[in-house]
Length: 322
Image 1: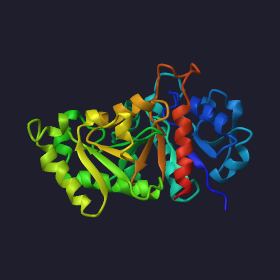
Image 2: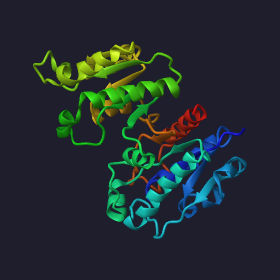
Image 3: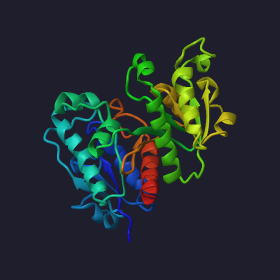
């Protein structure tokens, strides 16, 4: 049986997403099958798009043009300038992609970056980002955001919250769920039989024995020790400033960090262009390029497609194992 294609969402129509979709198609047209949901008129080269009625038609269209599932926008799209009047269709496209994958008409979702303020202003979007909205659509209680590249895999235990809220948000149950979901995904999706997970501390020097914070003793160590009783390969809490050099990276398969920047700064420093966002804990595969809408360069034809290409490749690979 032919594997269903990956569906790619439009994301912010005024950003670099449409440009990257066509660049990715040019590179991947002979390697994999994906289709794009959006308004074909906003693509840099609409003449290189082929409208289709269903994802199942993507395979036969792929060689000749970017397969497009049309989804029009009500207002003019001015590159580089998000229009809140187009916010509702952006959200609807995400929901449409989820429906395809839930119905097994698509193997995975790859989402292009969204402009959160435009969605909030134009559609009352009540979620911090894609991750939380996809969890809502899937009716799951807890999902995990992994950033993956050939150099490193990282997972922040807390995601899109202010730094001042991290210490209160970080609890032992939250950390145990994050570790458990990450480990299960490494086994089921990444085919790592016995995942090795390194867990950071929250504070400098992992709290230095309580001199620089109590979260290690109160939350992180109890979570690690509790899960170690299952025979899992866990280490930590580690001082985050010594965990990401080359020798340290050889000792684990993924890192569980305590907050957003503690996880994302290392991977973006080591492998900015090839980093891919993977949402773990959903009942389907979702990936995304690890960058934003880049409104300042939209329309100039200079956006780097590497992360989008890697996100599509990983979506196809993980989707095939689902």
